[in-house]
Image (cartoon, rainbow, N blue to C red; front, side, top):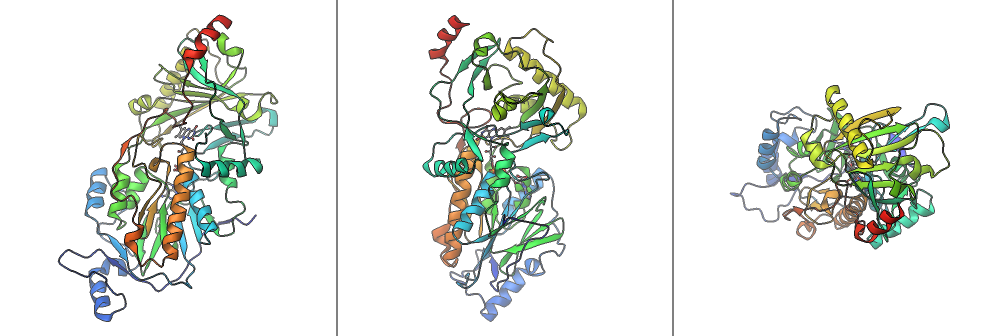
Length: 494
Ligand SMILES: Cc1cc2nc3c(=O)[nH]c(=O)nc-3n(C[C@H](O)[C@H](O)[C@H](O)COP(=O)(O)OP(=O)(O)OC[C@H]3O[C@@H](n4cnc5c(N)ncnc54)[C@H](O)[C@@H]3O)c2cc1C
């Protein structure tokens, strides 16, 4: 296995320089770096950046109010790298975010012969919203496993399909034969017929994420690491974590979103990228992981075909319930029955609290409401649901995008920076994967072009956003309810 886990990233030196976007009173069409008077001019105008990447600067405090972030975002000057990237220079890209999009961006860069370092905050592993919680209490039969964000994925794009075939051959993923459908209050379950294949990660989603780079030799992973600052200096991007230098890069990829990304970009010198990121809107969703000693009493109509998962309709505290034990082990495992429940986005919004500091009273209230939702969905008498032997609630404060520019990636060639992520194309693992691949390709092509034709490489810096439709937990083309066909059969069969 060539993937390296390191606590500091590799560096790549180059002698290129950068200039900020010039004030409109100056008319340099094609500035030539290294011309002495020009250099002197730049030295003066960019004193702040030339002071060095880690020097403390006034007004560049990381982490401020939303209002001041917005002000900074709009006011900041554009960083412009002008020196060409030499042919004999071996460029390296810094990728901030090790979810599906960041990992596939790194792999695509490798396919094109470009090195990268992926930084991710994950303490237990990579993957971001491909999180899996494993509770191993020493007894295999009693162990518990929950996918606590992405549950499964569908495939509609040929490129993604090829990738999924590769993962299947490596036994990282497989098609799930389980039944899923729509569940309405009172235990009315309507299975989806002729739905597209659904894929699951055989050992949980996080294991898939952790395995993606296992054969790469040109990608380094730095984890857990929270990049808190990006600074252009001497022709390179310098990344740091709370003052600790984490390496220098020819180009950077922002492969995460939400409040964190807005803060990071608010004083980065990338106003166009920051502006697009700020237009993204995200839902909030509560997750309840719960293990039960006995199987849940599924409604009679569904019991003939015990469902593996259901999109729940008409109950605010519940939008999805999925049986991890059945999904991952079929019937081969005894022990706890591990379920993942998700709230609707409107419930998430109504009960929003700081996700990193959930008051225990809120956690308890949310758990009660969600379990009551389960009872309602399954048509069980009030307070009759068995008490879980394990439970945990978590708020996904920046869960899923609700709007999108509908483009594979965003790239700012002047600032040598790009964005990838699910939200650029939709709200699913497939969307995230395709976005990462697109940005990997684009960044590689840009770096190989020498960086001298920026106009040809600008992508998505001004595209409008449109609302995203779909389930509360993502878009799955073809996975819609067809209860009109199934309802009569099930009712007579029940
Ligand atoms: C509750 C829920 C259920 C879902 N269910 C499904 C489903 O069933 N099927 C499906 O296809 N999709 C589902 N999704 C959506 C899917 O999980 C996402 O579309 C996909 O995982 C997004 O990948 P990404 O790479 O764009 O971002 P992310 O997975 O969010 O990755 C971003 C990574 O960047 C890291 N990061 C952030 N800031 C920094 C920083 N400053 N420094 C370093 N690292 C940083 C984060 O920790 C994270 O690991 C679900 C999402 C949620 C929230």
